[in-house]
Length: 385
Image 1: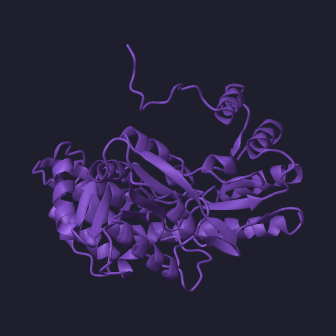
Image 2: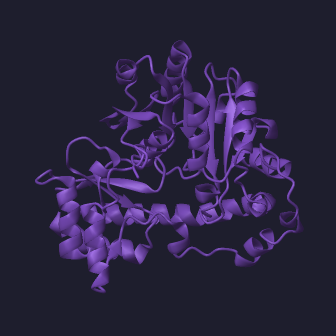
């Protein structure tokens, strides 16, 4: 039987994953500087409050709403502010599911979405699984990262339906500037495109400039359809409690929400427990984000201290998010460098090529890593780069 062409041709692991499995099978200690799961990073969670939230009586009542429970949407709207209302929201089981619904909403098989890069590689597969193609459009770096609006214009085709941006970007940390936002929304309005904005990391500003747009909800009436995605995974550092959401603004918002609700009604995938717990969990979110921000800032300071003794290495600015780009001499390919560090130092880092960084000379580290592991990993790897 032939499987769908939407699937990968092979499920074999890449070279880095294969080597990692081999080392762990030999009981080698591997320091993971790529960790993105906050529940494995040593943060203190209010366990009693979380357990109580997940055992509320409402979780025993199944009364599905295709947009999601009113109480949960009210809590999410209050959490975001900027005049967001429950009527502008639709709940999903995750941001990934939100992308799937939006790609179903906006495109037919063979249509395209444009994704400024570097960016998270998941978009390629989320689009492909819906029969769409994600086309990468490189951003450029000059003191900070910048969207290339001319590049987006050049990449536009008759099959382009939307642009996907992450604010701040993963892994570059780039927040959209107010000028970029204006240019981007005007571009989409002129060409009849939707704009999908992933703001899961927006609560983690680090070195953000004054003109950084912390949330696109600051624009109450964008000239094009805008779909904002977020969720508990990053907002409250609770990836195990599957709850995401999509906020809809701009021209045709009511019709778009009606169509999204129809799509969501075919799955009704959001659990009653996650929806019932949402108000209490969002109340806990600021304290959890404070812990995460302290970790990010501390590890960034540790990195700067280590880089001061390594003049051939540097890092790029981190306006926000959980990652940092380490810049190195491109004496070998990024993946070859990452494999060498894993083999020789038992330290896992991501090559820049995993995130569609052009050329070589970048490694991606997670600032979420426990501090002792992060510092130990730096001491092992920096001398070998």
